Image (tube, rainbow, N blue to C red; front, side):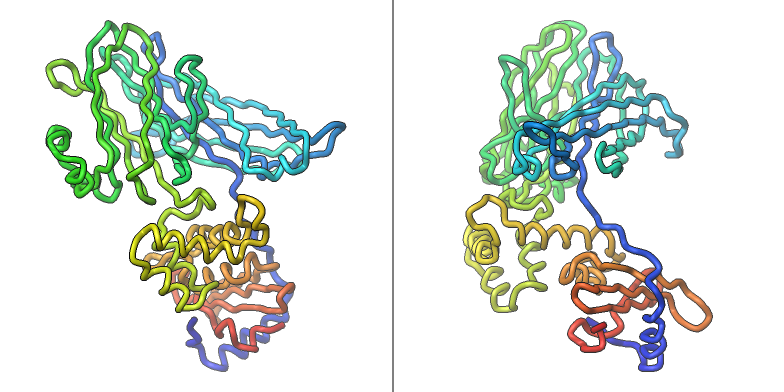
Length: 441
């Protein structure tokens, strides 16, 4: 960390630390995941399926006779966007209430989530859907804004947006949606589900392609891909490709495909579904991004190499180099897992709370403190947040005639304070290093 300010400036700022902190910084908490899927209806119109996935850990449960109860309210407001991207007006609003009851306290802190969906009819156009969750017991609110493009569903054959599923029973039509599109490497497979609407029965060919998202723009044509061997497809960033014949009856028809995760390494992907008629003309096409995450231990880890680099605040250089220089991806993943297993406070459980807390802080630092040049986790504020967690108080001082803008983070529980000076455009740099005794209260 850098210390590039003169002693007069340091003295002035240390004197200002005697002022009562101006505000407390709100902690970042992952509350719920939302997703919007555009689908056709039997009358030829379109609908927006608004899914909400609420982890039990985000709800406040109250003890009741025989168990624990929680409740929450979800509101989805659909606003149309004008051609210039501005909000043109509210077109629909839907509110629904959910009650959750569990038998034991352990269930309230489990990885279980409550899922719900609401369908809202919408005309073709561009929309933004604001999804808000309010916890019944605490009154806390959380929100998401999701963009959606409703396509014209008046064609001879139309298809919905793809929806990823963790489980699917074709006989009963029951499924468990994967809201957010994050697939764990612990899963052997996942299912892509979509709906087709045809004015009349048709014989189609459907092609499914999984493409590395960073190479999507350079992907060869589907006809060229079909002529390549599996290893050649992997070389061009398409680790999965399959095609099959599809007999579509008139009306609304569900379709699904199980996709194995074998061969999909950690990273970001795009799933493309293309429908062609007997003449080879494309009649419908849809795309769905998704992410493969390492081991499913923490939803914030999207890239193993990056996760290893981010160990710099908790591991020695020799430990990081030993993991980074492993001869294979599998060995690298094993060493990485062993590093965190040695620090697992509850080795008898499936969760590693210390690992989760660490990468949760990394994710928050990236969200809150990133700059144009640097990811948030390598900035000065990001490092302090990752090392020490949420400050007890933050004093935020704007620019005035005698000093640059600066922030003071107070950690009363650690007996420390850190001063960050804005060198311009939000580039906050630490005044003195974290190991300096002058950071002590």
